Amino acid sequence: MNKKLNTVFFILGATVFNVIVAIISFILLAIIYGRFIRDLIPEAGRHWGPNLLIIASIAISIFVYRFVLKALLARMDIEKYFDPLFVSRNMKKNLPPK
Figure: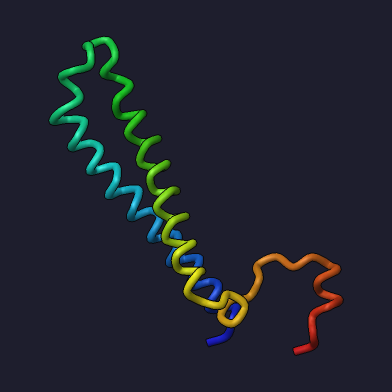
């Protein structure tokens, strides 16, 4: 496999990972909210719960994604396996021919 294909697979895999983490965190937060927190909130404010759950699950997935990505990139050489997605015009001039 070449570097461009590795890059595409990495982006697809990272996106799927991020979505799965968001779904899992939403389910866990919904369980916690439904069992423990909902009864503590007044009736007039309960409609904010699902909206806050969605925002919190997205935030958790971003933090988990960044943590895992930093740990993964610390272990491997990026330039060896992946091709840059966007290359500026100045960088194209300096790249060696293929």
